[in-house]
Image (cartoon, rainbow, N blue to C red; front, side, top):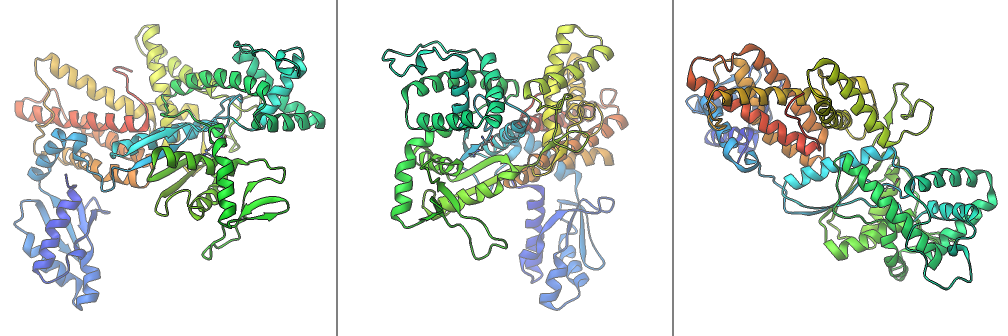
Length: 588
Ligand code: ARG
């Protein structure tokens, strides 16, 4: 369905035309003076220049056409030529009731039916999942859900870092620890064991040891390099170890992502792209795109409009090895073959911006993707501690995601168990749901590209711009609704009545705005717009709640109207939090 802004713009457009002006001047926006009106149109100012008339005259003429229109409670022209608008309660009510019975509240995205690859998560196999990866997973999951809501076909891929030096490091450390394993016996001709030579906790310990060693011991580092190359070249023994590492790590990663309510359609990684590299490089070479620079093969990406100099993209190192960029490009080759996407969205730390500029440009230059394929890099900022530096554990190490989630859930648990009368089991369950909401909302409510401070105490507060506050509001509505049902009534969400107070109308207007908001969050790939919106709706709802006797209302019809209104409020809030990737408990 059309949004209220579109409806008013249409009606205003007809009036502009009737008065002899182009309808394009009838653009309506939300009012920036809510104390004066709800919507406004500033088009008379621009039209005045073209038609050489006073803006106020134009605004007057247009307004005169519309005085009687049922859409408006009030429409007036004010100096120097603004048109101020308040919609009629009857129209607004009808609008909300239509939203209530329509699929997705009547949301019709203008751009839809696209196939979109969302590349997020990006964990590195065999290295512990740390908070650097939290943002990618949390923001990516929300972007994916918003894209899906807008009717696109989404393929979410975790794109594991599973092909790098860490593999060589682990294999060499394993050799030092257990030189007698069959994998390290050059003359071994049998089948390698199907059981892995390590458990997940052993594997987790191997990497940090190996990584430290490689920094102190040059020969070890060189061995790791050679082993990585051999693995990438198809060495059987190393491949067998690599498979064990992959199986064990993937199972562990899945557990972590499940915990976060983050899921992927594809569990592919850098390693899956390797088979496409040779042909891809050959073709780039045949097309004259690549040239040699200090032994490496590179492709220029500089464009005339660039304000600064951008280095060429290296697609092959002097020793013949592929790089991060090569594997991202080859992954596109595979994705084009398998999915023919219209768009790609990548999530990674914003420090990877240059990398993505390079691969996007090369992808278009080399014809790997179509010229009109929409390529987006969503670079996110750093999560900082209260000292403004990247978040660390108390002992100064990189905080593991698992512990971070545990910490926040524990804090919520302590809060609810101390202040509420409930069983341990119930409190634990609530802490799980609310803790995750606190964590995700704390992250998503910031514009993704900005750094933010991770502050558990603030994130878990039941007041202010937090996840728990939003959940608390929904729980409050749920509780009113169930009391209403206990009184023997049934809830009908499409029985919203004409507002009888300013605050009630305000709540109605805020719900109608869902349609504009959701399209903006989708088009701008901006989950923080949803957070902003639900914070606003929650605030308005709570004002309404404190100033209105909902269940105490004597007039049955009016009461039914209130119930419908808060039911729609709840449904919209629930939809929004689902798009952000969290849930709401029944009680908290
Ligand atoms: N594994 C990478 C890292 O930890 C992130 C991967 C991002 N995605 C991509 N297609 N490059 O930094």
